[in-house]
Image 1 (cartoon, rainbow, N blue to C red):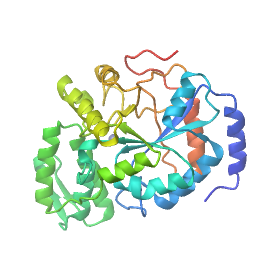
Image 2: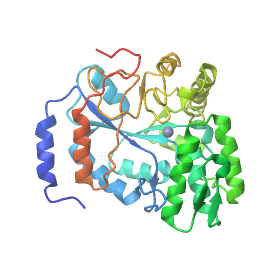
Image 3: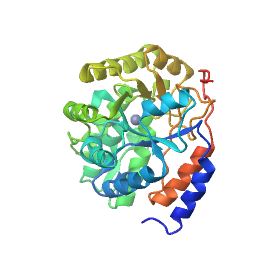
Image 4: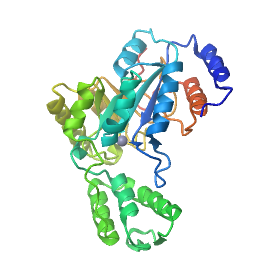
Length: 331
Ligand SMILES: [Zn+2]
């Protein structure tokens, strides 16, 4: 529900940002689940997403990424400009988010890890779905250096999911695959085949006016790959999307997206060489005059109540994110 002092807060925000036309904010979403999921309480559900987009449309200027970047480069951004992005390519982006975005007249940008289209499962979902589906009451993960975990309650299963994600995230692609295969076998679980977009759904998003961007083929942490592997992930993904859509994607988002930890200055230059016009990170802050075009920050408040969400978003607008690594700023 929207708080009673919400119009007052927004009035304050409007005056605060009325003249700031050199910056824009970008939101990141991943999944929009049909109903709240106790195992993933951070994921927004359909009803919350619908309410939130309705509030954002009334109080911010939501532009497509290409229009926002063009206006930013021309110094003609409307005040309170917001771009909406989705990462990874979940099927619910098409089945749940897309109709809501259409209803509100919003054009979003979807970054696709194309190796998972048509039945794939990303490592984080493999972990979550294995822990969700196992019928065991305990898992012994000594072999992973994690010890024994009880699985009787939702809270215990969430604890195990967090421990596994931290453990597996920074392994090489081969290391991830081996760890997941053994985990799945020991847990006696089977993975779903309908978590990610089909190519038909991807083309439906694109045909319906949504923008599609690159996000590597297999969603590795680029910073831990050697240059050839990283280039293959970037170029292969771009080519696959180009083949499917009939035109090359213009924008890229770094998997995981934290400067230094997840991508390097070398990766930034690689994205430029691959032909992308701009790239997005997961750094906090807003895009301003001094931001580098290959390191555009993004941010999503954790708050689910729209008034609190907008206040946190306003705080995010206040901090411009300067270039993080190696590429000079626009101006
Ligand atoms: Zn991602």
